[in-house]
Amino acid sequence: KRDKFYAWMYLILLLLASCLYFHLIQNFLLVDAIYFSIVTITTVGYGDLVPPDNPSRIFAIILFFVGAGAVGNLVGATLNQFVQEAKKAETKVKKDVREVRRRSSFQRRESYKNKIKSNDNNPTPKEEICTISEEDNFQEQSKNEIAERIAQRRAQKNPWRRLKQ
Image (tube, rainbow, N blue to C red):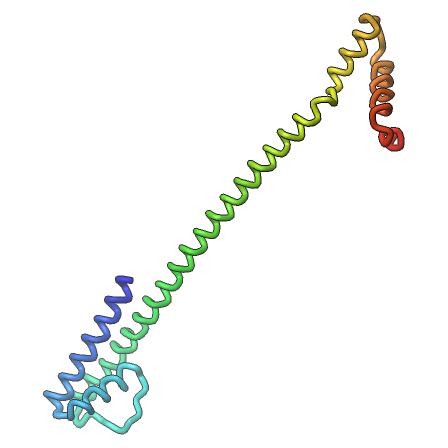
């Protein structure tokens, strides 16, 4: 915002200086001096008012280039302000997206924990091996036999598993 303020101040001071020059030194009417200064600074140049002598023409040429730079500076400062506001808005949106992702991740973890708690009645393979071994009084069994018995138990609990095998 400060850049935009300085750009406006620079443009206003340039306009005042050129108006004073054309009104006091070149004897333009005040309205004509303001009009000629604005037309020259904004690079419109209608040609209805013309500086009367060479020094005032040189001043008008310098005013043309300096004025174009001042207007460009003002436009640049204004666009810069828009860009900065857009970046702030983008940063806020990114922060909000991160927060939503964090919350959804937390919710997924919680739902997974709840799912695990609700599936506590389904034993893990290690627990099933221990159960089978206890039932058989720790008899020696091959891994294939144990795996087959686990599959049979699971098939009894969930009939759809039989179809998958």
